[in-house]
Length: 171
Image 1 (cartoon, rainbow, N blue to C red):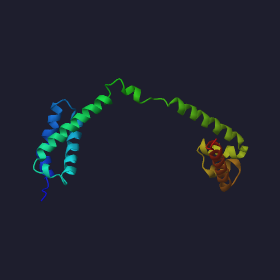
Image 2: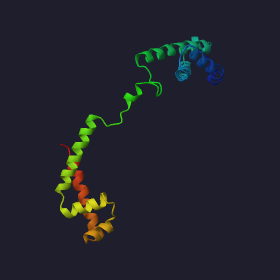
Image 3: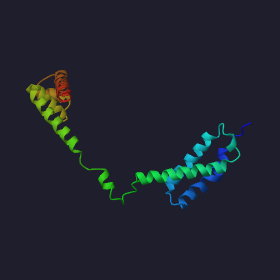
Image 4: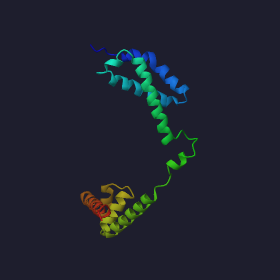
């Protein structure tokens, strides 16, 4: 008959001591807490069908935690973790300016947009500019250009359709 470990009781009894023991061995608190949690997860998944470990969950937990700690130290050696703003590396990670590729792409899109605007009939372009650049409503555009509100809306829609087709086309 297989007995189940009482993981709740074991966690309450051992988790804090296990984490602090890993911290005393030089591991950061966050990494030690992660290793402890992983060790309990391994313990929970290992208790099914493993008869010879059924009576020794404390020992099994210690061995698993030690092995996971060794793995964590190896991972940090291979890919060091950037710790806070005091690192000189942090400034290199996030750039204030867009990448050169993004700058070129944005310039190309701007050039396509300006070319597409030049292709619009004058009244359509004017309605679009009044709406988009001046923030005027369709009723205000209609009054400005001597058109109905629905006709002003149709001109603005035509401009958007034309820009969408010309600017975002696949080359």
